[in-house]
Image (cartoon, rainbow, N blue to C red; front, side, top):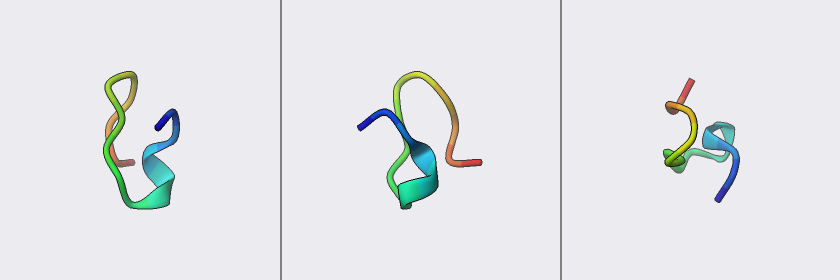
Length: 16
């Protein structure tokens, strides 16, 4: 996924 805000860490940005 592209967004770590979904609860899943993304390769582009952290879970923040």
